[in-house]
Amino acid sequence: MKAKKALAAVLALGLVAAGSTTAMASEFSVSELKVNIWDNNQREGLQKIADEWTETSGVKVSVEVVDWDNYWTLLESGATGGTLPDVFWMHSNTAQMYMENDLLLNLDDYIAADDAIDLSKYYEGIVSLYNSNGTQYALPKDHDTIALLYNKAIFDKYGVDYPTDDWTWEDVRDAAAKITEAGAADGVYGYAVNTSNNQDGWYNIIYDYGAQVITDDHKGTTIGSDEAKAGMEMLRQILEVAAPQTTVAETGTDSLFNSGLVGMITQGSWMINTFYTNENHENYAWAMLPYADTNGNGQCDDGERYSAYNGLGWAAAANTADPAAAYSLISYFCAEKGQLEQAELGVTMGGMMGVSDAFANAFEGMDVSAFTRAEEEGKLFFRPYTRNTTVWEDAIQQEGAFLDAWLDPTNADTMAAACDNAQTIIENAIAAE
Image 1: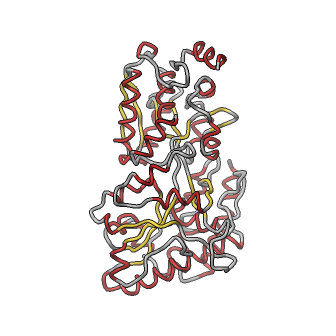
Image 2: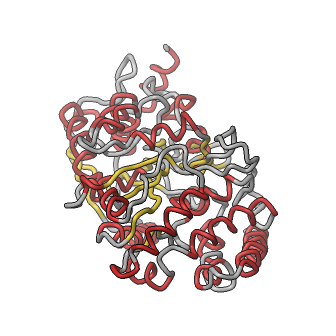
Image 3: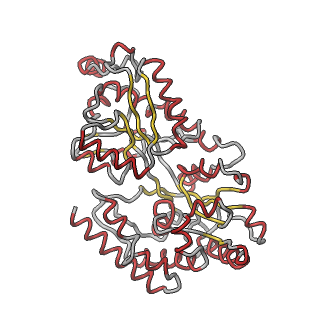
């Protein structure tokens, strides 16, 4: 404890004794911090938490929302021009490039002096994601999981039983087929998934069947294996009775669902508010992701139900005007109190383990416990990434890979070939990194 306090004093971090992550205003040299995020659903809750930090620190915080595409454009231009926001989100797609180019504040000494942050209490995959060559550049903000969303009104209208946590992917296929057939005159489909619905969709099936999009060492893939092909064959059968790719590409799975034109989709916990605030939300319900009964024994065994998880990181610009203030705010977001409040407000589940139970009760009238139970009754795998994820991730969604199978789901050979092509695309991309 004494060593930590001494280091805090030397670095003038603005941390006070006994693990507090805030300080008096006089210890900071700025009057305001600019924070950028890309999800408007989270802004109100995060601003509330930031305002609490302001009450102690005296430093105002402005949480500004920039849509996903423009977010990365602005960060890139800011990195080039030296005008990054003080504090912002990092994502697995791009973190490595920002870390390697010294654009993010090195947090090592700050963490060492901060009694409120113990990295062993956070999800290991998220901690590792934001660590480069032994240096920590972001603290885990949250984690997410995936669940099956369904419209009870559609199931009732066409006389199909609701999904349960005991459903297999075959059950999804069969229910989708019934709804699509019965709803043909109404333009209603049983299921919808786009090639871009990877973390929140078809990646999960690959892992259920025993394969990996990216191996644990981030240096390979088994997406062309027999196991992956078995999983994608299951998906192909679902695609045969789902909304066609042309419809999905034009409208999007979420819009189709909210328009009452699709009975089921899979989606991530970060999207709950989109459906919770919809006028038809009383008809919506969540179930855990289906499992793959690969051994045919009629029950979900270990390793047959996976959910992808990812986690954002709170990072600061390397050239922020007051690194101590920026880190103090990040620490406030990521320490246990901030993490608990994030869950209680329904912002998102925590990046710290064991603080997310309140999240399941944050949406009155909608049971979202399928997201928290996914890690209790199934297994998690971290969202596949490599040094330059977007290169191969974008390519495997296009023609010459899985788009071919989405456009023609009637041909099993096309899906198998897509798996082989994706294997080559990923291997070549990793080799070029």
